[in-house]
Image 1 (tube, rainbow, N blue to C red):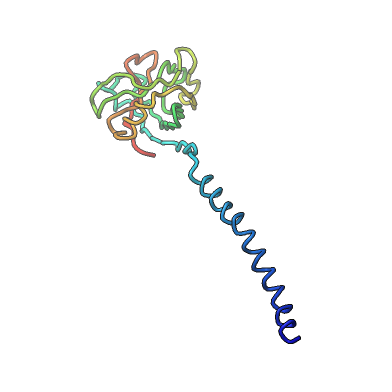
Image 2 (cartoon, rainbow, N blue to C red):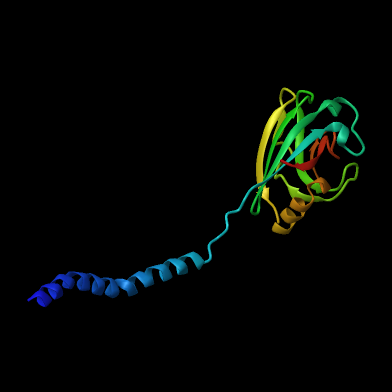
Length: 177
């Protein structure tokens, strides 16, 4: 009878052991499923790259003369994926100055270069009523061009053109913001 009591006492332990063994495959499958979910490719978030430009008339090549020689501004270029956002604050220009176009050009300080990124600003869209204004425009940027700017921002400049200064009224080299 003592043996039977010992056997009966171990039955709950055996039942628990068997239950643990029978659930073992399910427990093994869950980590495998979790590992498969972790290894599935996911889209990487696109980080914004921000550049600043200290826009001055004196930075133009050649520097401009006349009424708009007092123009200045602060420009921010935000590149996200294949979008380029221009945020610019103009100041110090004569009242009524018309800013007609703006771009990012390739070129180091003092060297004029080709347009690489357009702000989408068109002639007649921005008149500086009191000599200043804020501009915010978004346009496309080629992924390869975004990579080149990221690798060497100082090799590019922001430039805005006016009616009186069609070659450019304010210019500033890009720096990482």
